[in-house]
Structure formats: structure tokens, C-alpha cells
Length: 307
Image (cartoon, rainbow, N blue to C red; front, side):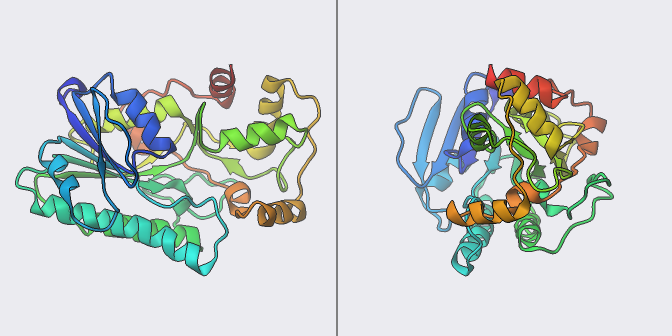
């Protein structure tokens, strides 16, 4: 299976990760169909189709023309975990996955590969024990339960001719979006010290390696099941912030202890878990399959993204 011959459908393609994939694949595949809640103008290689993430509609016709389906749909977790937001976070993932599954069941010639997003947050907080696909311990907090329900909805679908891959994605570092932008902004203001005790592991991946990994999985038909998408080695929060300050040439880095982070999180309507949880995600299956990361250290990634 060569990328240049493929048509790809991306659900939830207007978010940060979706835009990363579109930018990467638009010069490498035949055509991309993007399922979006909002209208966007089409281009020669990209067609946008309206969907609501729940109901069947005209968008389902794209599947009959596609070789690959990639689902990234889901409400951002960068919000306060109120009851309403918790429900929206779960429903947006589970309902969109079920809607795609129904469309795939009803499609006479469905895509032969379905890649569904999940998250490295599915694993429990760990500062010293690596979590791979085989031995990683799944947690029981709200975020971890969201991930488990998301994957359950995905693997409840089965069609013999469809290869299914759930990708547990670590923090993707990018030039135009994702977690790096707000961290960069506060660092420039002098608040780029460690967050909390600074011991928490950051499992990360450069945006180019993220797109390359998706392409690798698509073009290797023997690969299915669950994959962790992360760089080979995580980095502790305090060291990541040191590297970031050095590249930005910001000498001052005021530490942000947990109480201050809790206050700040309330003010900007988010949760400290996004910063304080230790994610020690190991991409064992990806490495064993022969994937070679281009960016293996945070220093290399940050220099490239911040240049």
C-alpha cells in the first residue's frame, strides 16, 4: 500500500492534529476528505464535508471513495471538568466513533484501514515506570476512563476486511498549535520554571514524527491493534522547561508550585492535570515494527519548532 495511491478521510480534521496530518499528507496522497462541523473552502487535494459527529449524512459517501479512515474527533480536554464538560468530552469521542462505525458497516466498500485516536493519558500517573502497550497499567481517573470508553467504542466495531489501529497519542509538539504554544508564551514572560515538583515525565512527539508514524502504520498492513505514539524517551518537566528557556534565551524561569497552578487553572478555565500528570509512554510496538523517529530528543524537536 503506497501513500500516493490512497484517498484518505479524516474526521475531526480541523483541529491541531488534523491540520498537521492534512499538511503532511496533501502532497503524498491522492486526495483527502475532511469531516468538519464547520464549512471550509475546498482545494485541489482537500474536500471538506459537513458532519455533526453523531448522525449519518452525505458525508458517509466519502468512505466509499476512501482507502483509509482516520478519526481524531473529540472536544478539547483543555477546559474545567464540570459535569457538562465531562459529558461533552465523553460523548464527542464515543458518539463520533460509533457514527463512523455505523457508516463503515453500511458502506459497500469501506476503507481497508481505520486509525482511531486515543491518548497516552490512558495510563496511570508514573514517574519511573515506562508504560508500553503490553505492560502499561491503565488508570481509573476521569481522563483515563474517557480513553477506555473511547477505545471500547472503537473496538466494538468489527468488519473482517477493515484493519483497525488505535493510537495512544502523547503530547504532540507543533509550530502552530498544541501544548507548546502556551508553554512558550508563559516562558517568555519569565514563568518558565518547573511546574509542580518538576518530576513529572512528559511523553512527547514532534508533529512531523506524529504524521510520519500515522503514514507508517497505514502503509504496513501487518500492523493492527494498539500503538503508543511518542518519542522513545520522555523528559522530566523541570528539564523540558530548562531546555525551552535555553532555546528561547530567557534566563529567568520562576517555578510554579501546585497551589499557584490550581489558581491559574481556575482563572483560565482548565485543569492542572494537563500539566501535573506524569505520562511515561513508551512506543514499544512502533519501535519494534521498525519505525525510525526523526526527532529523538526534546532539544532537537524544540530547536526545529522554535527556529
